[in-house]
Length: 263
Image (cartoon, rainbow, N blue to C red; front, side, top):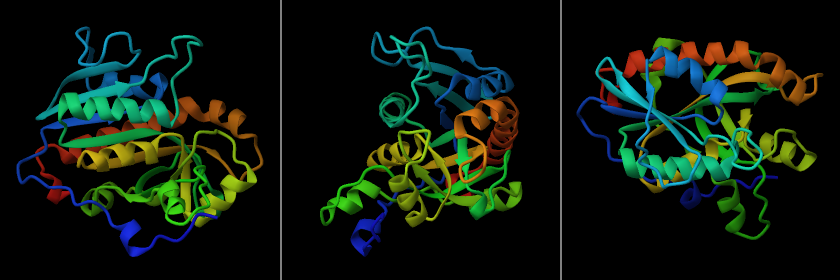
């Protein structure tokens, strides 16, 4: 079971909030199918002169939308197997590289996720995550256990959540699509409504580099439902990605012209 956080472990590093309007936004999106509708919506172009190291498969789209410089960064295709490079390792790397190179005012991790009907989640729901944690880093040694769970808070956005009527829930992250009994126990302890394969890793890097981050997660499958997760995920991916696209566009429209404290 994920351990309870003590006061020191739960302490969130304070992020300096600039008073000027948000200027540069970086979306971290794991799958190309999740990113494509937003690339089209914001009329972004793929950058040929990469700010990233030579040889990595990472892809960056950029452009101007209203008063915002929008970047969408994807980990690209695995160079051997040709599938989307999902998971915490790729997410950590592209988040670090993107923050270093682009110096965003705000990072948005947008993507699909599994949801729990026991917590009220339904297919197509879009959640704004309040807290994120890992559920598959089991280190049963004092203090290391807290490090493994790695609970962090997302950037506080009460006005955005209220204005857009987004559901709020906790997000739990692991590197497997399925859920073994040990993961389930940890997810319950994390009080999670949705689970993904990137969020907590992105939160770790953003916290490390003192960059505000928010999480938009659209539910493709009901983890505690009757259908196999992989089957339900593929069945709903296109429709749910459209819902994610609408929510992400609304978020961008809302933050345009505002500073972080106004969110």
